[in-house]
Image (cartoon, rainbow over all chains, first blue to last red):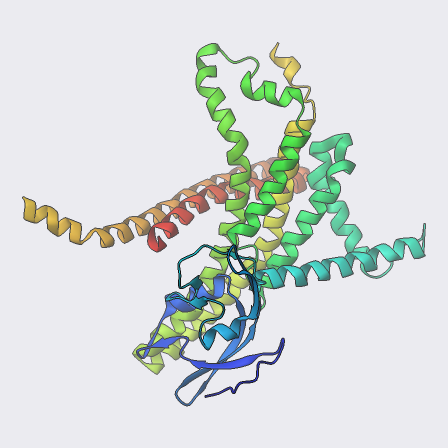
Length: 340
Length: 84
C-alpha cells in the first residue's frame, strides 16, 4: 500500500512490513543479525507509519543461474510481490526455488556492492597519490602523498622488510593491497548504514586463500624439508611433530581468517547489543529505557573508539602475519646451520 | 531411571546454551590472563630499558592480537553452538 507498480531503477523503494516489532516485542536477535549479515537489499532506516513500519532500502540486483532455466536478472524488490522465474523468498527471507532444484546465486549483494565502493575509493586514493609522483618527480610530496607515504613506508618497514628481506619488493604490492583493503572496509563498516564486509567469513576466507596460494607457490625446498624433516629433533618427537607441522600449513591461514572475522563481527555485535539494550529496557518502562540509554550510549561510544583501533590493528596483524608466513616459505633462514 | 533420562533430554537445548555461555566466559578468562601476562612483562621490560619502548610496544600489540585471536576461536565456537 505504500508503493504502486513502479519499479524505479537504483532508487530506494519503501516497503510496508514489520521489521523489528513482532507481536509487539522488540526482537533484538533479529535486528542484530540483520545488521551484521549480508542481504540482497541495502537497508537504510525504517520510519513508523500506519499499520507498521516503512523501510527505506535500496534493492539490489539478483543474478541467479540455474542449469535448466539459465540466467535470471531482477531487482530484489520484485520478490516481495511474488515469485519470479520460479525463485521466491522462503521462510527465512532467503531466495529459494519452489521445485527444489539447485541454483547458483551470483547476486550483487550488500557486501559485494560495499566491496566495489571501497575498491573504487582505494583506486581513486592511490591514483591521486601516484599522479603526484609522476607530475612532480624528485620533489617534496604534497597533499595526500604525505599520508600515503607514511602508511606505505610503515607497512614496508615494519611488516614486510624485517621478515622478507631482499624479496620485499616482490610481495609488497600484495601486502599493501591487503592492508589497505582490510582497513578501509573495516572503517566503512563502522559507519551507520555501512556494510559488514570483513565480518563476512567468505571475504576473509578469500583473503586467507590468497595468502595460502602465495605461500605454496613461493615455497622453496627447504620449507618442505623443515616441515617433513625438522632438523635437530629426536626421532620420537618427530613422529608427533610432523603431522602437527603438516596440519600447521592449513591452520595458519585459518587462524588469519578466523581472527579477522571474529574481531570485526564481535565488535559490531557488542555495539549493537548495547544499543539494543536501550530498547529492551524501554519495553519494560520508558524511564528504565531513558536511564539505561545514558550508560549504553557512553559504553557504545567507548567500544566504537576501541573498534577504530581494532580496525587498523587487525589490518596490520593480517598483513604482518601474511608476510611472516610467506617469509617462512621463501627465505632461507640461517638458523638451520645452528642445529647441526 | 528412564524418566530421569527423558527429562534430561527435554532440557538439552538449555544445556547447549548454558555450555555456550560458560565457554565464552572461560575464553574471556583465558584472554584476560594471557593479555595481562603480556602487558606485565612489557611494562617490566620498559621499566628496565626505557629507550626500547617503541620496539617493546610494537611487539606487545602484536602478541596481544595473536592471543586474542585464540580466545576469539572459542567465542566463535560458542556462537556456532547457539545459532546452529
